[in-house]
Image 1: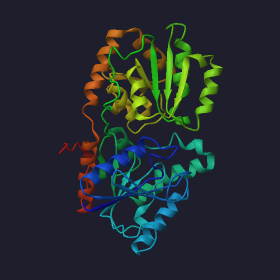
Image 2: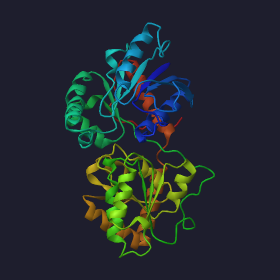
Image 3: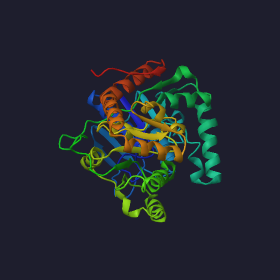
Image 4: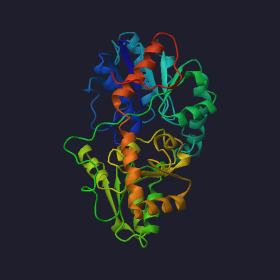
Length: 389
């Protein structure tokens, strides 16, 4: 494995970048550390340079929300001719990230493609509008599986692998490499009795977009406020839906019980997690749920929705957190955990123990194993748990 090209519609510096982008860049950094030449082609956004090198990854940016796709294909095709921003890039494999829509790299690249899919977007497409949503879901559920029927698939959880299989993807071509987790920064506190707030504190760590359904966390706090005096909610993360959520907090008359922190740096993020009692992730859909593991690093259990699919892999129900079916059950589960300190403590420590099982080194090794197989002309299936070397 000498060189790899990564394709993604955003990078982690993008204002709307999230867990999907973080996974890809962490994998890229691990590959670069192995001596693999790594290039990431992604969209440009205000303030971002066309070219940049971060963590050993050469980043090339061009295009916007929709034009990133054709411009990337054109750059790949021209690069093969020694022209344009990807000239000199000769990958042994391409990771084509499908965030609803893939790049269809097989149309332009002469290297084998690995389609990275974190989860299906059927529940999210309506946000794009009726027409675009229908076209997008058709591309994702019909066209893409047909175009990539001979290609290797890569996903981040067993439920996401099952979802791909229901779309007709051959199980023998679906590899699962779970998310890793970075260690808590050395200068940041780690969750313990001394870091917890004296008043009950719930935290949500998420991008603020509609499908994350942060409204359900706000509703739960509003319903629990009289039952649990002093209850406070920290919403950590930014996004274009933030103003709507702030309006919802005011409508529920809990604006004084909610703090919207916006995007924060790593140290502040872990500081907020370390003082929390319970983490809530009411997302409609998750491929894995990296925030679950980050909260677990601080001994904080997560309550989330079973229907999100990916959380059924990142949360061990009843052991490291709780899976529920609706906002009523969410409210009850959060309330019970807040009121039962011994049960919350045991669950949090079990979550902390499980969090130690995940690292980006292990994730990088797993993806390297998949890429190496593809470059040899073979495929990988099932859970890939490559050991840290």
